Image (tube, rainbow, N blue to C red; front, side, top):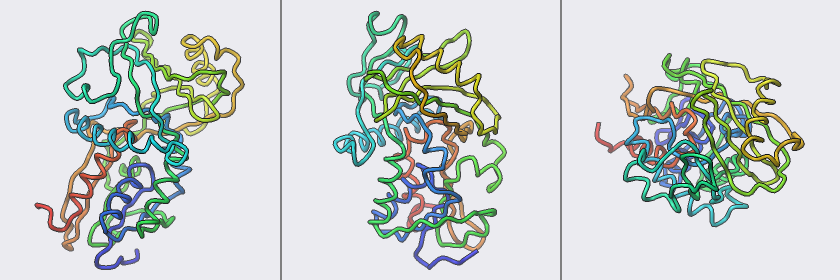
Length: 320
């Protein structure tokens, strides 16, 4: 592969983690190029439901720190929702209590126990960032370009062939073959987009018996209904039976959704790992490789925190 300039950083991967990392690096004055196999609009990030919440992501303590860093950024971006795609929206998280959370929860705006009128069971009420990912990904691309960065569509088949003083690996599920790291695996998520009959708040509910999750996220011009967690399933084709089940579970939460006109279907493969890999390694030629992958369905939640840590690790003066 092409040799990069002596002071360049190449970020491999153009999803939300890769773009956010590239933005942090470029806005800090680094010369950054993003190498991505496909445009951001066709990545897994583009189809994410994108509610901020540190859920099923490890290591837990670090993930919460990364999440709170991201929360502060999203709160600022929410002041310009049309431009950034970020809004602060009220909603209910079913099946979770305050006792299950740590001290970090005090930082979450409006977080409290939900009332019986709000949810029939244990639940939390909060005002959280809800992100319109197509808009947000365009924002990240624009910020990167304004900071002097570049985005190139190219397929990387071997990380060793990416030659630069610093390479940041944000390839998500691609890390399974590129590192290679067999511990990265897909967890398939299917969504249904429907017309919004007037739903303004989000809701997430888990059935502990059936092991299913239902969520309703109001996005501009549509409702996003989910979802599925199909482990080790590589299929990107929407399953009609799964779609019908999603709509049924969501209509049980919000009866006004019964019969809502379907606008489309989306499928994404979450890059799940037992814990996020965020670390620096030295390559035989003296260059630096920073890994930043394995975020599962929490990439949006921790993106800015992980990006800042990755940028620190990418600093040539960082401790070895």
